[in-house]
Length: 398
Ligand code: V47
Ligand code: SF4
Picture 1 (tube, protein in one colour):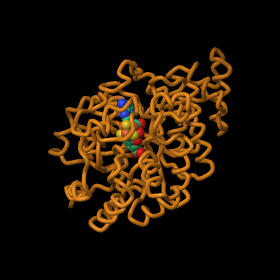
Picture 2: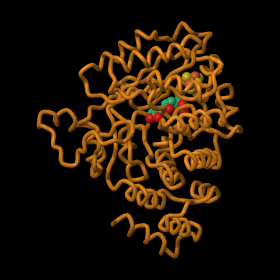
Picture 3: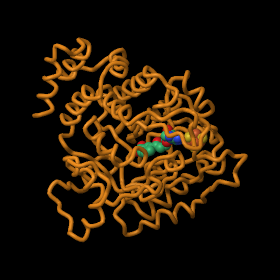
Picture 4: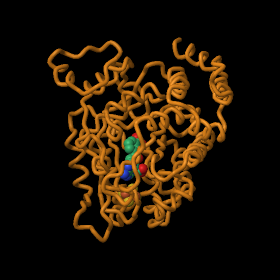
């Protein structure tokens, strides 16, 4: 296998720094790298080196398979009691006039729009407001499941849950159990930002802290729910903060095995209180995906959220450890377009996703939220007229 030959080439490269050769050898021997080695990679490893190692791991786990799903988002409100400095999306409670706050009926209208359309997941996240409380979400989850039992509800993050459960005077376990019984299936990875208090207190001081975020995921895993984890990188954090963040996730994953995907989220700087902080380069994005793939040996999937990093970078990321590019989205999220992402109306058809993946020689697989295979596109050809709509995409040539 080409990826293994490339890894051997690194290990035998006498000109290469000894520590980097040792890390490559560890990966070949299936050994976990340490905290210090994680920091060393960020500080000293070049993109080509990281790509070879991360791609070796990616291909060992998944071969060329690259996953996506058919999903849409509901953002129940863009008003928020919190004041994260990087957020371009929320309108503080005091500026409420510029915001929206959905009722259960509005959310059901958003679900009904997909009647007869083979989406498999609704991803729900947004701001935090007092009215959208435990009863509100329990009612929506129940109605949503009654209307469409096959639709997987990937809903809310510890940021919302911490606030909601505190208000309802329930423990994290009790609150999640109640909402699971109402229809909640799993949790997306948001709200993690950077766990270390040195950074968190500067960028997201007033919402749940690292311990609370991790505990809510622990309780979800205990209830048999699968969850994702994110990391907001490329702002004021140092490399060791990123490794500290991944270390905490790796430790919890050893205990619960409840995480499915790790999703690095690139800080975008448009129209927020951190607009003076420059964004990192695409090279740094790729290095970060690769280090994540190497460090998080117990995570099955590394996801690149195409709506945030652009289609081209999503394609490139598939050679740097990424095996999942999220889903169709159908222009149902504003979080990234408002923060300056290239995709102002993020939506891709299944055909477009398949072609995007094929153009970089990978094998597209539609999955459901739990990574059960919905359609393996290895040998599926689209009709000529269907192809016409995606051939002119700005994609990287093979
Ligand atoms: O927690 C907010 C981030 C997250 C900015 O689990 C920003 O499948 C960059 O978690 N620049 C919410 N990022 C989105 C999220 C997510 C997205 C896709 C898939 C999944 C999943 C989860 O968005 C927030 C925050 O970290 N965010 N503002 C910004 N200016
Ligand atoms: Fe609120 Fe989330 Fe924005 Fe923070 S990132 S202000 S919690 S909507």
